[in-house]
Image (cartoon, rainbow, N blue to C red; front, side):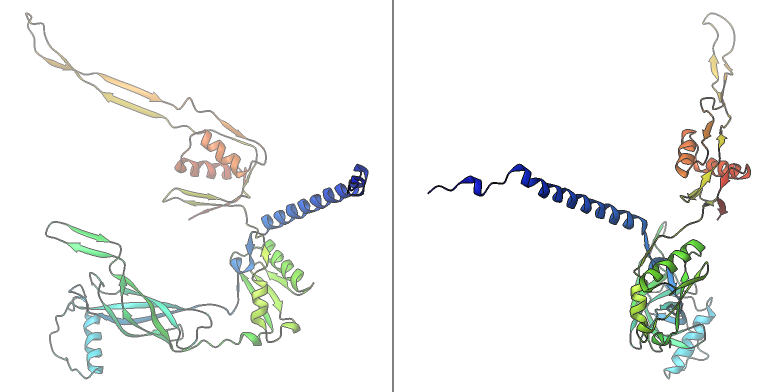
Length: 389
């Protein structure tokens, strides 16, 4: 049995609408891809990376304690009287009286203990603590921190620290040489702090949320407010100043402020940065923002170098003649006026790349570049703020 091909084949004219439809579909997909790429390129940061929620903050803790178990590298009790007083008081609390005795141990060191109490830390949770020697101890290697209360700014104890120290540095000595790597008088105790008191903060009872920008800026604050309004509705948030965005808690999020914050902190925002140049005179570091602009200006840089070299030569008399051997001075003077370097002209509204390329073309180092940037600023051709660190 034969089947006619005319029943299964379509004419070229019948395939045209299908091809056109496929072409339009591919074009639409490309437009969506380009649009998505441009949006992703513009959204460079999340709100959680450029702003903090007021009230959701850490607290600093500090305490004074004793480290025991050192191998003769502790404080000298004659030089560190506070260590001796602390040791005597600790032994008295444990029922051992040492008043009036001459203590001469070097296995104890007085230390300062610091830690950071995270927001919403609950009783019984663990935190890391840092330990630093306070007296003339040589090393804290092998020591154990005794129970040390960690106090907040209000003088109340919020955590207690204790445990074996983890020291990253070490020191080795001999009769004629010594080696020290790292800082042997500083240590950490991972999870060595136990939270005993909570910081009361009723997050779900907040009537409004305030966002504090880490780098205050009017434009960035308005962009954050616009992103929140686009997510929650017009008029939900407003920027009150360059560093604060105020958001009243919507009724739909009553008692669910944590969910509101989790949705807000993921919103993408493109932060705006001012035109600024940071200069560190000590190390010669220069950091320029991308918004730095320079008016039309010409820059030239040259150093005059004079090099004097003495190459004395020995003059001897003829074998049959009379005379003495003398040294004849020969002086060679070289002058380098950097004549091979030329003046570089920067075009109007030159960008950061134009400035860097122009200065590199002159062979300018970081130290000379600092002076050139300050000279361009003094000439009124630099539209940026210079901050010297």
